[in-house]
Image (cartoon, rainbow, N blue to C red; front, side, top):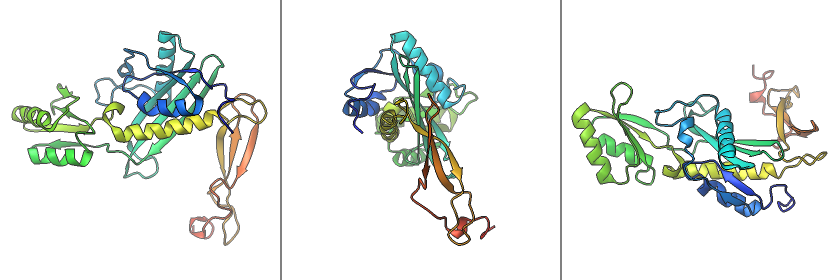
Length: 284
């Protein structure tokens, strides 16, 4: 289905960002919806929380994205807002692998409609390390992709009284680090996860934008409301050996948030049977 008959076609989209996320989101929405992208000046999203720890985020990522959206809508009189929020830490299922977990939220205040997507990716340089020497500093930076990917330096005193961001070059990094090492004997170096300083994260946001645009173009078969999406998954995929139901997904249930219409999509992962090794009856 094309995008030209969408209620979002050729509308003004305000992107609630302070960190140039329009570089990742804007191209997708210009291509698909011929959107007019608006980026507000001086909209400080840091008040909702910072990755470097000065301001703690309160609430879930989705709640934070909603707060950003509402604040931007009210401040700039916008009725169509895209807001996002990222989190970094262990992958939700691959526990020992770091992950970038992005929420992207579209709020249409004119039509009282909210559409959100989540993109979880192991494509991230998220890391931090306490270092004491120039060699340790250099090793961390080479692994994290500096200077294309920026880093943050912190003192190791209680509360990290000094936090230094936006270091642009090796010379600046080394002179700043040597100053802190001379005073404290060690320092904490972290990857800067702000979008404009992290090209890897920016690529994940672009993937989320693609997912969001496609979901906005998924309409309820009954009432045509955009955002027709999977509301729940149900287990029961039969085992190929014993044919009994397993805990693996049998179907996705698509649900319209407006009228409640639902459709079942069986075998969403293109599997009609599960391998016996994942069967609780054959392999308890």
